[in-house]
Image (cartoon, rainbow, N blue to C red; front, side, top):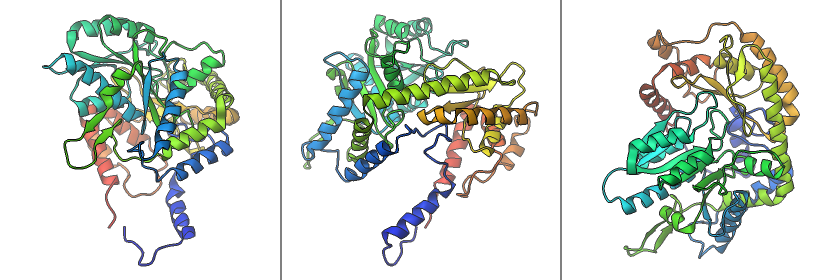
Length: 471
């Protein structure tokens, strides 16, 4: 980037930034069913954005210099502990997002394990549907991973499967992870049984509820029958839940909650053996903006309990209506009955609708659905993150889904496995900065056809090309 010789005015800067956003999908309105979350309350959103700007320059590194940092964090953590029905001695922290919360949960478990195991390498026990953040944590923190298949009918991790795995691993297990819900399929693992088995073996159990913690908590307050997943479940040691998902706050802010404060100390880092200021970090970051915390606080205050109850009720109703509509569309099915507000769409037994072609057909109609590749015997799917504002667009969405399914039903599935070289040659230029091509099914099919050990380096190469400095 070449800087202008003379600084630009605010209006010009805003115009140039708006031009950069021209090819991005809208973050409000419910047309993008992944990555963004819209409570449908513009005033609350504005209050949150104002708080983000107002605290953007406050450094959350040192709450002794900026006491507002501790006040914000204590309020947010207290809210999270109440949602998760935590005991009196529970504690928590605010992180930059779900991935950091998951990494810190693994770090705390690793520190506890190494305190009693001076030798050896700890093992992280996870389902094959667990979020990739936990594999990243194991990669960064030096743990082996024991991956357990979920039940192929319910798509849930079961206590029996965990028991078998722990019997094989013996005392190397440092942490068992359950999802509430799993991102890919939208179902809550059998956390009561999983946590009980972990507790029998003296292993902490973490519940990854980054995307579902708030919806499950407020659905319970709404009187819905929700699967047990919080601190009322014996054996649950820690829980992660994101505020920048169904808390509707700007990115990025998440909570990591612990059953007791002593366990939380495993995430802390302190160092004073240098001539500078004593360093105490409660998360992976040192210097960080207080803006996201303030934005989350403002959003929570603006919506209030009634606002969250209403938002969750609307999102859940929209989820059930979309699920019912899918069941009446030939060629597609819901992979598992959703426990919260996430839906996974796959082809039905006739295999007459390719989910990747369906994603393209829906994008032509203004909807962004998230393609998910197959994994072994788990099918390729489309992921939907249903939002409160989706309730107002359900009829339009389902009509378009019916029409899009009719359009692609019976067309041959995109399958590039027979000629990967040609598929690579026809790969569109994703590094140009232009809008995505209209047809992306071939790209997703190529990703789907590659084994993970080939797929991952290829994806890294694409992203490396995307992030090439302009000079």
